Length: 389
Image (tube, rainbow, N blue to C red; front, side, top):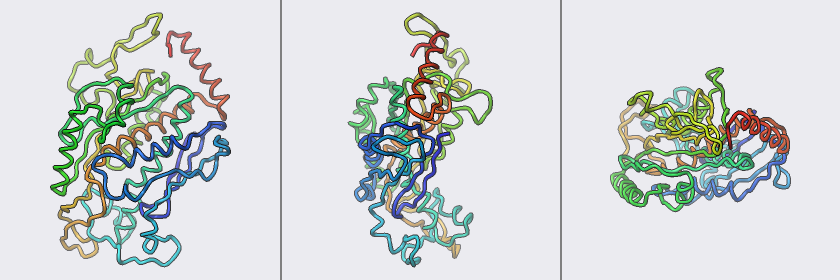
């Protein structure tokens, strides 16, 4: 089973990940992984930390000569800012516990509840791990998963469809998004809407505030049958929702037309099925976003995620000092005022991990040769039943 574990703090030495379950003989392209990490750091509205860090992956084990060995892959992403924080964050030396102590906790962040749970008097111990800096690890993991799935023509893309109240209501083809999204400062493929989004970010920043938005993730060339209807924890949409909701600042996930299913009749929501010799079995629409009964249908997967505004505000909200219980304004940590662009990259790679997990579970194989053979056998059987790739 494909699984991973991450470790590390925002201002610690490194972010470390272990990715287990990758078949042997998958050739990895380090430049493609680093490009995903670079995209995570880009975008209009990002903060000063992005000027310090230039994330690059360092693979410590599980790969030889660019090819996976079948064992756990250990991954490091160094924190360049650690040199400025070593006297506060060194794991095994005496450190300065007072200069960077955080007692004035931030509404909307993990600060207060984390300290209550783990019995800390310093929210630094919480915010260092709960920080969205950790998502660099998940982007690296997702980028590796994409390279596995590339052998089977499965493709991913994502874009920003809303920042604040500025929405892009147009529908786009997968290829149009993929070809144009990286040309935009806010990963919005509509130039007019992009300009309005940038204006909104500037306005929010001038007020010392933050802003959230909505990102859309698309996956193309999936096979039917990833996931299962047989039990709740085998449904692929359930697992996708869990992993996406487990991503910092995500407060909502929907598939296809999402909550609009509640505003319509079944006759307008369900995707009618057709068959012809050229295309095989197909849905005439894709309102359900490529998932039925907890399983992929083979149609394009469409997922949207709502990201809340970042809770670190430069005009801080009223809060308390958790140690004295006196009223204070919340602490300010260096932060973005809009990270929706980064969110689209993170969520795309989070989805890639889940898709890869279910793909490997369904197809099976300890190495690329067996995986390919099993995949071709499954696709042939589907073809005998009328589904065409």
